[in-house]
Image 1: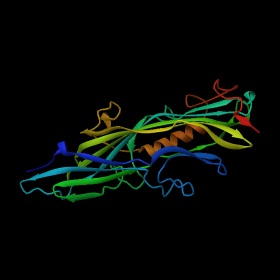
Image 2 (image 1 turned 180 degrees about the vertical axis):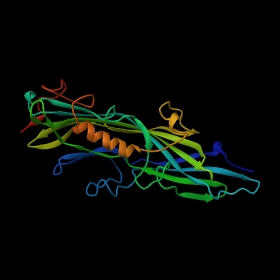
Image 3 (image 1 turned 30 degrees about the vertical axis):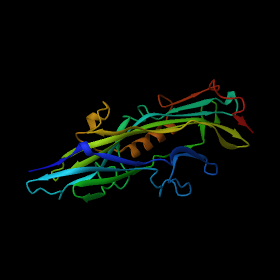
Length: 284
C-alpha cells in the first residue's frame, strides 16, 4: 500500500502580473513602506494586506491497496533568505554626517535563512493548508505579500544631528515548496518554485518632505517549477526538521537592533556624505 505523486505532471499556475515592488512614503508617520503594489493598503498596514502574488499547485496522487488521503496534509512550506538589507542616511550638510545600517548580517540577524510563515500558521506551514481533491488531482493555493516599514530619519550620535533617508536596498529570496505530510508527520517535498524581490530606491528631501528619486526595484520568479526540494546549500540543512523562529519575527527584530542598537557591524556613524550623494539631496 502506498500514496505516491506523479511529479511528471506537477504544475504551478501563477498570478503575478500586477505584483510590483514599490515604496509608499508615509510623510505624516515619518516612514516609508516597501510593498508589492497589488493588495497593498497604506491605511491598514501592516494588517489586512491582500496577497500580491499567488500560485496554485496541482499534482496527481496515486492510491494503491485501499489507501486514502485521510490524515494527510497538503500545503506550502516556505524558506526565506535575506540576501541584503542596507539603509543609508545622510545629514542636510556634510558636517551632519551619515549613518549606515546593515540588517542582514550578524549580530543583528544571526542567520540569513529561516522558515517563513504567516502569523496564523502552525509549523512547518507557510499558511494554513487549503486542500482541494478532485481525484486524482491534489491542489493547494499559496499567496504572499512581502513588505517592510523603514523610518525616514535616524539620529547620528557622532555629529549629534538628524540624518535623513537617502537610499534603501533590500533583496529577499524565497523557496515556496508544495508539500505533503503523511499521518506520521513525515514531509514529502513534491516540488517548488523560487522567487526574488528587491527594493532599491534613492530619495531626496525638499521643504521637509521626502521624495523618490531613482526606483530600480524588481521582482522575478527565478525558477517556475523544480521537482523535489530546494538544493541551495543554505536551505538544504533546514529541510529535515523545519521549525521556527520564523523569518518575519527574526527579520523584524534584526531591523530594530540594527537601526537603534550600538555602533558596530550593523550600524556605523561617520562625518561627511557618501560619494554618490547629489548636491540637491536636501533642500530646506
